[in-house]
Amino acid sequence: MAKLNFGGVEENVVTREEFPLVKAQKVLQNEVVAIIGYGVQGPGQALNQRDNGIHVIVGQRRNSKSWDKAVRDGFVPGETLFEIEEALERGTIICYLLSDAAQIQLWPTVKKHLTPGKALYFSHGFGITYNDQTGIVPPAEVDVFLVAPKGSGTSLRRMFLQGRGLNSSYAIFQDATGRAFERVIALGIAIGSGYLFETNFKKEVYSDLTGERGTLMGAIQGLFAAQYEVLRSKGHTPSEAFNETVEELTQSLMPLVAENGMDWMYANCSTTAQRGALDWWKKFRDATLPVFNDLYESVATGKEAAKSIESNSKPDYREKLEAELKELRESELWQAGKTVRSLRPENQDPAAKSENKLHKSTAKQKFSSTLYHD
Ligand SMILES: NC(=O)c1ccc[n+]([C@@H]2O[C@H](COP(=O)([O-])OP(=O)(O)OC[C@H]3O[C@@H](n4cnc5c(N)ncnc54)[C@H](O)[C@@H]3O)[C@@H](O)[C@H]2O)c1
Ligand SMILES: CC(C)(O)[C@@H](O)C(=O)O
Ligand SMILES: [Mg+2]
Ligand SMILES: [Mg+2]
Image 1 (cartoon, rainbow, N blue to C red):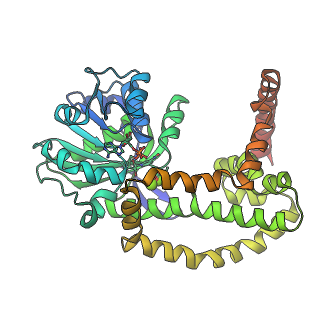
Image 2 (cartoon, rainbow, N blue to C red; image 1 turned 90 degrees about the horizontal axis):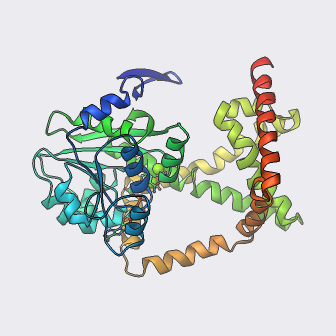
Image 3 (spheres, rainbow, N blue to C red; image 1 turned 135 degrees about the vertical axis):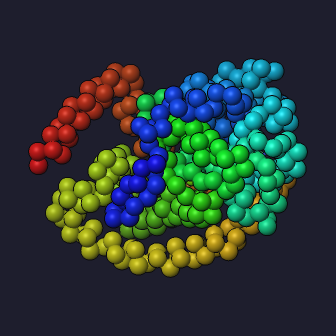
């Protein structure tokens, strides 16, 4: 395991160089990896492992959309696709990838099949950390660990197909066989992680819940909505307000920030933008800091988990969720976004698409020279 320096702090990291795919294949050669649930993470993890030569089966409710999707993805009923209980029986490593609320309902069934020597794998610390609420307490004779991809299952698959890799965290909760470390790392590599950083179940779930409610989704949607509202109330058109709030961020600035960091972005914008962004970032930090503290508190006390379990376990959960999603979808902000996205040249006719490709490669060359020679 490598120790790497992250801004002055040393952390344990496992890279593909030190744990290559061939090693992962060897560790997993006698295992049957059962992916239970074929929603968002299930397909990404199952397909990447299958493409990486791992013996993967899928367990999913028959007569469900996810079952049909698994069939479309090439899993064969009776061979590599089974009802959940049969997959649980056949699997030696159980990847529990149902939604966190559904994991509670199915737990008694899963537990029955956790015979000594098997492994129980999660992609979230939720079920174990909040086991006072979930009731998920695994038997002592099985390994229990997690690999949590830091992103959507959709990106996990897309990045794998592009020859890239999404980073994941890993944690071991219980090592019954003495092989938990090699098993969890092998799985992390096999699902296509770029590298794996160490955490524990509690830290994983606390940071993940904070992140998705915070800057990854909740906070950023809140910032978008607030800025858009101000611009609109001051007489700016929807296209201007949307471009200045979302489109420029996702299309122009964030890809640059992803490549080079916000420090580079600050150093490479106009001096006017630089002055303003330097003056204002601390005000935004100070205004939101108490909200982030409240959020973390709500996560750490189990309030967020309770809310999520309560609402996601209701029989009318889907209808209620749909009403909330409809409000977002039909807001002027995201309706304006739909039009803006449709105007992107790559979303228009094929001729515009190929012209755009040309522009992209020229722009990339120009950009590299700016980056390295400035
Ligand atoms: N969505 C992501 O990209 C993502 C990212 C990182 C970690 N995770 C974690 O991965 C795990 C899986 O999340 P997901 O978003 O892929 O799940 P999901 O909400 O997409 O659901 C997965 C599957 O659960 C099945 N399911 C739902 N209720 C069921 C029930 N009562 N009985 C049987 N099956 C049922 C659905 O058919 C679906 O195929 C969770 O622990 C989640 O926190 C998800
Ligand atoms: C993709 C996310 C937001 O990172 C994940 O944590 C989830 O729960 O879907
Ligand atoms: Mg999450
Ligand atoms: Mg996450």
